[in-house]
Length: 376
Image (cartoon, rainbow, N blue to C red; front, side, top):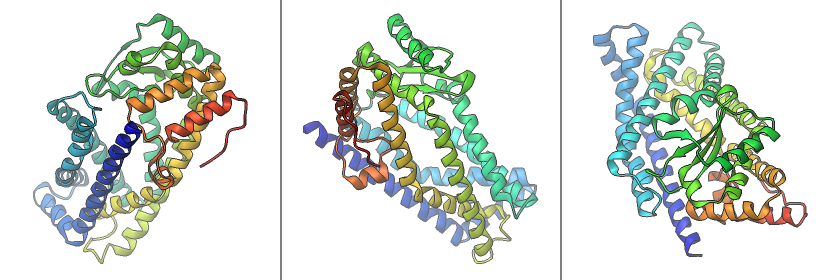
């Protein structure tokens, strides 16, 4: 009960911080546009960079991103460093956290510049259909990210080396062979110098697919427990969960871009834009698309929880080892400070996984041969 109370406090503080951060960023985006600050920034950039689209977009995004990052940084530091340290989940120093945050911010900035260039160009060459073309481009980018993130991004933050526990490696590779899911190998994912949280993953698509097992999981779980955790990850690939999740994201992207087009078309003049293709309208576009994405969070979470339940069932059937699955879930819940029985509204709005207690109860039900209850 003490750990559950601790987990509830931890997650409550995280949710409050995330919500406040999002509210502040949304309010600033609206104020930035309505106050004329956005058009002033665009005009200032054009005054010394000319009107050519690429330099205007790059400089505009750089300047505006610097401002919004300065307002986001205190929330990020509190949520992702101070809270993690207070609740015993972080093992990294403030300097290490700052370096990692700077790396992530640089990657985000690069993505924002690329997205800004794509949107600004499409708005000029195809003002009527830019939203659909942009959605297609962004959906393709998501697929590329899922494919190449294990090769290009993960090594920037963590050391990844071949898994040296031969018996465990053979267990995991045997699971992939039975599931007809080819992988390029099994690797130890060294995150223990940053966090005590434990995890395993099957990442990448096609030729980049690989097994990752965190050093924290290796240190705290038996081979049988790790086998059941990884079998759960294989379940996602066997059932095509990656593709259905990407399809939903693509649909949300398309809707968000369409709504952004509607808002830009109707409000461009009212907020002082030269037209919907005005670079100064990018914050309004981001605000509209972000609001649309946020509105679909319950649906996105519901699909994810359904995927997780099905992957749990696959893990139990693939290994036939419900005791190891149950103890693995119990250890993970304690190590990662998971909420075991959150309020229903919290689960709907914030949880991508079923609560730990529900997953354990479902495994016990499966072991008894009973049909598990279905909840969203």
